[in-house]
Length: 336
Image 1 (cartoon, rainbow, N blue to C red):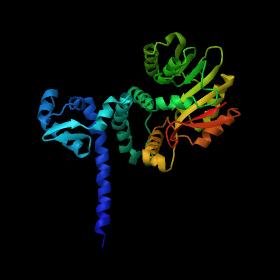
Image 2 (cartoon, helix red, strand yellow):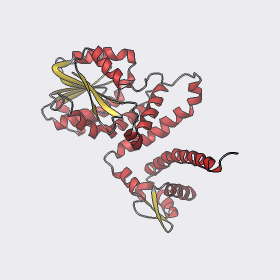
Image 3 (cartoon, rainbow, N blue to C red):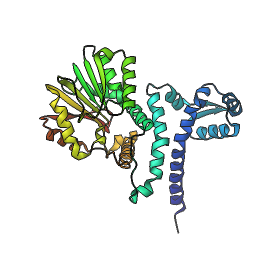
Image 4 (cartoon, rainbow, N blue to C red):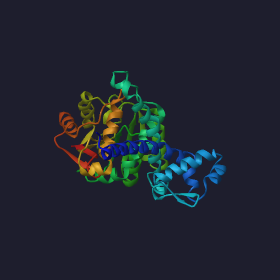
């Protein structure tokens, strides 16, 4: 006979999984519809629904569910945002966090829903939809402040004079580096014209356009200006290249470095251990690796040892690592 306590424990695990699954679309709805912003001031669901022109019964059910999950506080019949939601609204990374919720609903859920067919050999979809690419670029901003601090711990990268950003995305790293280093010049290469336009806008906002340029193209074949760089960046894009292509890619980058220059490759890696587990980074990296592999034009997260080997195969005499987040789930692997 089954142990009733064990059965209850397993049932609770399933209930917790369903609860966690529901939280993302509920949070996303709260952000997209202005529900959270309105609930900075406590109010009852009916008044909230009337104010925003929404269905009263669904607003009440939405608030009840988020209160049960601990995201909303309740006093009497009125609800108000809790501390975690206030952080979600006001954190410097609020835009990236919102993009992450969108990515979970628009990209992760459909890929996981299709997993049975993909596991049986169905054709994997292409990654490259404009909105998907922009969301991915926005999500990487979650690591940007820590990454910029980590970059200063890489030998030779503290005071760059000429920066090349391969696959620059929306230009956040290039813009911030040029803002920090007023004498530096920068070049960004981005294969997606729409994302490149976002990068140009970011450089305008940072007022660094006189010292920076964004070019559209694939770095492996793009025409580059004369001269060499003392810092070359690759941020969260090594998985766009098949393992067999990486040495040639890195070799070309090495050919554009100054004698004392450094190439810094930032990547999420599969990491196990107590700290990554407690921070949720172990599961997050494993999920991202699965999603990458679910596309036919992307590749799984690289093993750190393989990045070192690719750098050595490209001719770098020295390689090293600098963690970006605690536990090392995100890190720079550098070569010089």
